[in-house]
Length: 83
Image 1 (tube, helix red, strand yellow):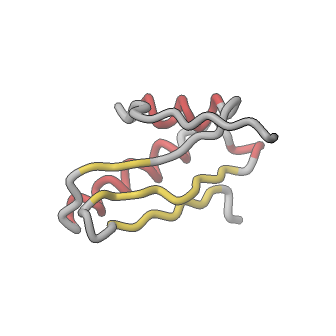
Image 2 (tube, helix red, strand yellow):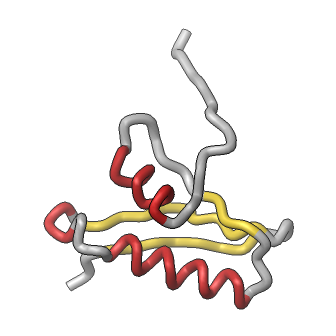
């Protein structure tokens, strides 16, 4: 049974970018996201990555917490309002 998925790639600028993270609601808070992120970071280092980026949408506290537990902090906040 698949309980979690993470996609990541190292760009031409050598930055490891996590495209998405998903953990089934019943498996959240059990360490799957942390384990996947640790594995992706290890893989990225092996690929020569110099940094890591990820995104969390406003109100997505679980994803923001995942990044912060790994020491990944916000460096840009993009604001938006429909016109």
